[in-house]
Image (tube, rainbow, N blue to C red):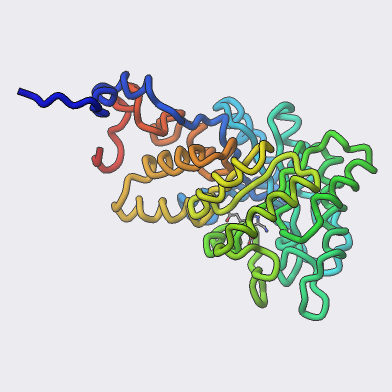
Amino acid sequence: MSQSLPVRLRRLRRTPSMRALFTEVSVTPGDLVQPYFIVPGKGQKAETRPGVGLWQLSPDMLREEVQQLAKGGVGGVMLFGVPDHKRDDGKGLDKQLAPLEAAVKEVKATAPELPLFADVCLCAYTSHGHCGLVKDGEIVNDESVRVLSEMAVLLARWGVDFVCPSDMMDGRVRAIRLALDESGLEQTAILSYAIKMASAFYGPFREAAHSAPSFGDRKSYQMPANNRREARRELLADVEEGADALLVKPAMTNLDLLRDAREATDVPLFAYQVSGEYAMMRAAGDAGLIDFERAVDESLVSIKRAGADVIVSYAARAMCRKERGWRVGQAAGTSPVVEEASSAGIAQR
Ligand code: PBG
């Protein structure tokens, strides 16, 4: 005789279709934005390290990539420039950005309606690798903001839909908005990196973008992970300055702040599952410790559940291309389709 229990949560988890019916949050390719690193030249297409998900492409190699991603329903593509020369005076940006200009045009010619995001930051463009200009060993704010605004205007002119300041200088959202509007680019949106931690999880990115600081660290402009109230101030400042969308990063270590952000404002919210997060899951998967694909699925669902509308992730590409039997859109592992396809990896249901 079984006991009479008023609540039996397992009733709704009994079958795959039951679980599918009651899925609260799932992630589809349309929720994801795929980053690419744009290098000069022709015919270049390589991952910085096998499986790490950081793809360096020359502009001409973007067409086929983007076609496939658009076909797979990706939410957008984000471009980071890797220039062929560095400069520390903030001048000649148009020359440094030449590969990016070509890349933007390539993406727009291939998939005109695909939302296109481009990074606005100086770390990959300067020899010192800091996100702003350096004067007497200091990262100066207001002069950096002027250069960043110029960069945003160039990118917007070439046709990106979102300029994405990731530098963490003060006042740059407002300055970029003004510069865009003055240039007749009032339709270009700003995705602001509002809460960006001085984080240990950016390592693989810096390798791909050649952007590691040559002296010191980024702690005088990126946020300390310790501070929740400060994160809220960063967020609200960017809303005030006119950000169209806000971004929190890294994602996995800031899920609480994502939830805070969701509750603090109705502005669309992005989370960046950064290079180190992805690489960590990949390394653990390669070591046979976890099922990489399921770990990525679970992490993306958690990020969305915490409050993100959109996730920038190196997993977008493989999901859209349905590589390695990726269970597209079924991140929670709840549908019959998922059960059937779950042969790869370690059995640990
Ligand atoms: C540039 C920038 C960084 C990332 C995004 N934009 C690196 C950094 O601040 O050093 C990191 C993204 C990732 O790790 O995937 N400022």
